[in-house]
Image (cartoon, rainbow over all chains, first blue to last red):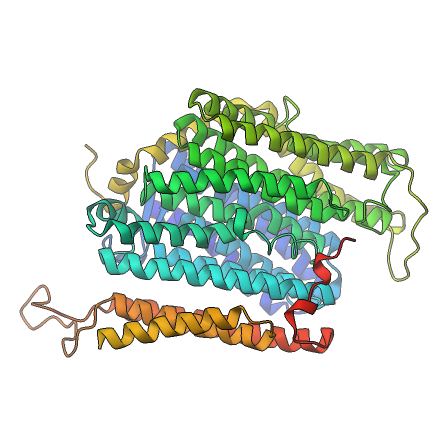
Length: 506
Length: 117
């Protein structure tokens, strides 16, 4: 087997899994187990790809044998493969959680095949080295996310879908406009080739225009400051498993696209850095201040997503090597923790029958062990040392101080405090408070009525992701090594370009 | 021809944005469709319009001589059209479902997702 073909494995596995599941349409039991099995296999394959790239350096594959830059290129550098690995881990956790929590009517509408296509799209977007191909993967992701968001067709879901759909369509159109102008300026779409050709373009004002269009397009996906309004009005409406994968991965894809495109195409653009700095401060403030006043548990987590996207954007705006290490580390930590938080919200909803902070409570009294398990993601998010949130924040704040970016560092510290406040409120209201009275809901199966196997399938993915959070926290040294290598690769664009275009390294 | 296409593209963007800002669900979708068409035309325009020079390599040559029409933008547009066709059909079904459930097409009344609950 040719070595490059390993690159296709994380894509092929999800594509085939989705197709095979279409043959089992309506067979709930088959789809649940097959989804878990294929995702477990995907974790193994992604880990293999990670090891190959870790040992052998950047791996590229050229679709159809077209020499670069003419065909579509898939590029696996360390950033891509780490994100593919994390995506498949999240995919496994969410498919176990879905098997336990998604009701069979939704499964019969094709929930699991669409979930596979969503993960396929994410992996494709992380691995592609071509700008237009990135757009195509984005579209695959948004169309499968539309279906996941609306599946079941409840009123809130449909209303949320209108907003989610409109803004995601708009951002895709802006992104495509930018691609069109970039193609008109340079005549190429290969990102490595663009990295060479963009600096040579004479119409610098048009180049800046495309940079701003890219920023608006990716910024809407990533939910940064003026473009985030679709997120808190849609993420709390679908089933918990869907919120979990959306909250964990979709906004981070926008952050990945910003890192990738701006590090390659518009390195050291002062204008972009300034815009990103302002957007980062506003994003942190808007997300955090809204999170502390919300009442719905999932809405609090939605606003916290926005707040923490702000941390990453702040790190990207600082741009130093240490700040990038912080951003990459934060990205890994945040994907795992945010997915876990939405699964936590699903579990508490199952136990108490509500997501409203007013009616929640008493979980610590009734289920102390579950409360202990749920404490891990909550405290990791806040960044209690030595849990996983602490190290990237340390890197970001150190980078801020050493570059004398006082205001930005101040915003990061303020955002951390407000996160602490929001999480303390969640902890007090959900776990410590005595609930007002036990809500009675017909047609709702409460946690205590579940059989043990189903309880285990609820707790297993939360425990799994908590264990990964703990690993990121206690094994921070290893993650730091990965993040430092990624940061070095991102700063050294020439290396990436040479690997993709098959030029000799100087 | 270039100027005409540029003006049409601009008009499609302007009309699309205007419709997206309206309160009606149907106009919102129409606006998105117009914007999608506008961006397709923009890609076409950005690939440089060349008339009567297909990118075909003559016998005995290795590369195309002289000016030729760039085939890449056409491939891009084709892909973009297929994608936007899929998204638009989803959108039309979506607004039909929304109208059945919510019984209004006024976007200002579709706001239960933002309730403080």
